[in-house]
Length: 81
Image 1 (cartoon, rainbow, N blue to C red):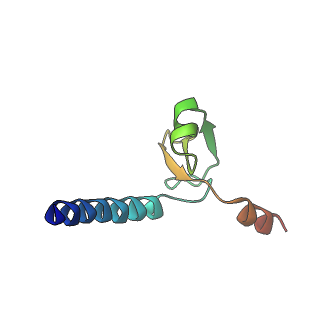
Image 2 (image 1 turned 60 degrees about the horizontal axis):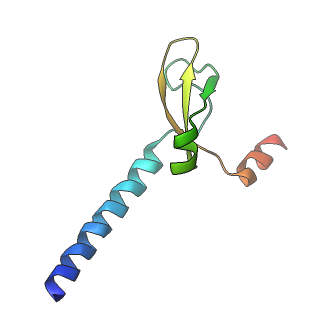
Image 3 (image 1 turned 45 degrees about the horizontal axis):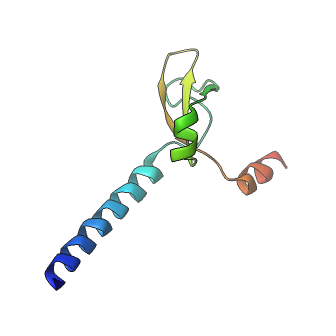
């Protein structure tokens, strides 16, 4: 039984590490990584509930579509001032 618990814990640890690195690799700005234009937000009701820390965005200029990180409110306030 102990072996099963240890193996399950290692699987959960690997999943947490991979999820963290994938999240950190997502772009955080609201400009297109290809052309630098402003990205338009695409609303997904399911994505908003399942993963509130990411948004689906689309570039109107070059057609790039992807997922970006949502900036926290503190970061947005500091960027405005």
